[in-house]
Image (cartoon, rainbow, N blue to C red):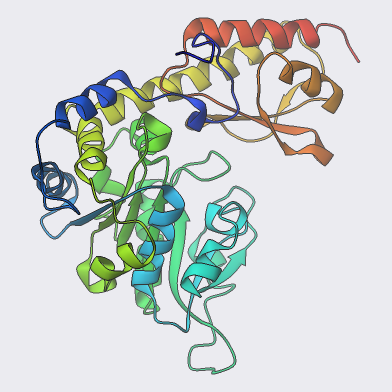
Length: 356
């Protein structure tokens, strides 16, 4: 029994989209018969082979249920009990995971304000100090997000510069790759170029935002930087008994470049949204709208009057990012269509047609 209108599209989050048909088909194909539970199945074994092909021969893969679980489990494996993680103040592990890193893992987050959601070696040094001081949590890992929570991208050279700096300090580097596929599509380079080859030690590989029903993976790129994941995944309630269904989804994403096709489409739809609105602004058809951040993947950040935003939300759901500044975030997904974008642009144009 269908309970929703499957033609409705919003712009609040790529999590709102359903699962990609190829992913649903992969789940169905993995069904039937018996496979050994808890990861000893042929789908998880094949996932390891595919991940090693993408990231390198030393890669170890641990499928998990969700992004928070991936981040917390990954970081826990990288740190002793007294360890701390340097991250941006906008990082998902700090703003949207409800204290899970601190409460579940017991680690300390050392956050740094940034103008664009990106860390640099210089910004890392704001909190990377105090080693040996028993009164200070020891900064032993850095976590960066690709793409960032502000929709920006780290270039290959930027990731490499961070990794080199972090390693010289005796720290390790974690990447939250909730939207890593969007980054790969935007950068136009293989995944390993800005991960394993650039010096990332442990990666949280995202799938749910790019067409999976559920499921992510902790991907260890440098086994010396991580320990105990075989135990920590269970301890953190992230060990799937029927793991073949998580692994089959990730395989569907990776084996035929579905991750790139879907992410490239999502990015293109964000570019269409911004481009159409910029054209309308330039032509004088829209008033009172501006863009607050670059659009480098599938996120568009804009500013408009709160009253106008509230009226638009009655037709197309999206989120306030900073209501005090009138800033909103619009996200596109793998299933966003050109007509979806054109309909949203038409609604925005109707709302903002007259000068305030």
